[in-house]
Length: 342
Ligand code: NAD
Ligand code: ZN
Image (cartoon, rainbow, N blue to C red):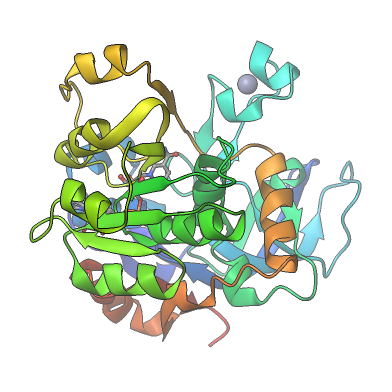
């Protein structure tokens, strides 16, 4: 089968033939229709420090996808050949305390599809059936292929009650933009989003942010005055991983505010702890998606009118994957889809 492989410890990926995967007793084999390029894939493409210490070579990567089941192990129940699925990219042990308590997103032994084991940028992907998620027919292939990052946005945004709240999102990457759309959909009042990239801020505005702020030109305090916010934000969603964005957020949170951190900052990033202590802030780290509560919420939000289609800005045939990665690297895109049925 074809796959996008890290063939050598250097930047880039190569479209080449690899051995078909084998189906274990509890696995499903998925024929991939569409995949999306994640920020993680960009780290892998660039072969940065994190990628060098994490990604085995050679290995094919990718973890955002939709496809249909073409084969399954003898023990698999609840799926049939032809089911259209995406899948949870975190494969958990099933035996640790958190797994046994149904908190699989907190498993201590998580293995990542396309990060620690072979991924979805291929004609076929094999995963445990437990990780597959059936997609209702009214949800498009495009949308199903981005359930993984949509799930990060959902897990983060829905970690606090947003009804009637003023929400600050730092970072208008694809996940921050989807979180803005979710916050509006579930009833937040002001949804203010920051970035340094005007293209992405424009997209965030189109998708439901009530105010976008380019922090290279405007200050959050000025914007709060302009929109009549006197006290501070009730909920903060950090989705940039940029230390300055996080400290700016802490400065404009209301007392008693709640902050969820999805963006991954450099290790040992310092903050002003007085902002946390004297404001009585609640801060929570977010990893992955809740299995599988987040997935059901995603389906329900799409079925109740959440429109995320503008976040998908580019489509490429898999043969043109270099152009796809270049588009993602340019910063002038939302989600970029690679079509494997071409
Ligand atoms: P992304 O890199 O596309 O988005 C980050 C955005 O932050 C970019 O648009 C960038 O221009 C913007 N930015 C840069 N400087 C800024 C500043 N000073 N203020 C505000 N914004 C600024 O990433 P993404 O794919 O949307 O993911 C968002 C973050 O979440 C990344 O840090 C990613 O590594 C992380 N992530 C975490 C998990 C998890 O499980 N915790 C999962 C997926 C992604
Ligand atoms: Zn576990």
